[in-house]
Image (cartoon, rainbow, N blue to C red):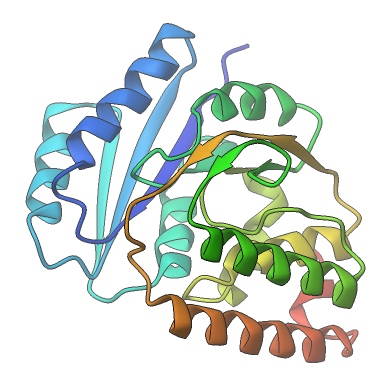
Length: 239
């Protein structure tokens, strides 16, 4: 039986690469005869991203474009999941810095798992040394503090069964902590999470202020740690 695969792509000022990236994702999945929709969610874009997104949605039946007035990758993810028609959902970085074969594996593994983590740590990555070291430190501290074994909490190359995460949507961090929160949520509910290694080549300048992002991430870890002390927090609520 065919299953619809909903691909969510959060974007911020990505007019230069948006159309080409959507075409590449579409061609990749079409070649594998995977029924799919591509949901583009612009969060606070100020360039021609919205114009291009609207044009793509009008010209291609399987492309949906959503626009949010303010930045926030978590906000974009939540709106994308709400709009998704498929039970299989994946989120990608618009620059497609990680190999698209992740989608093939995730689509198959979501028959048995509730989340599939595409892990750069388990694969090969070409990124700046500073970004690699910062990511590894964050992952190490996160896993030690929360007793989990996830090796990549980045926004891209993650996939979910929609029904497994619906209960968490109203509580997710609006910025960049939502993937970590979803991992904790599924962990608390003893849901099945599978990790696979992916290759990543990401040498372009980050869309985030890395210092600000680092401070935000560690503050967010502290907030999550405190919430987990309360058995009545949303992490433990039924999905």
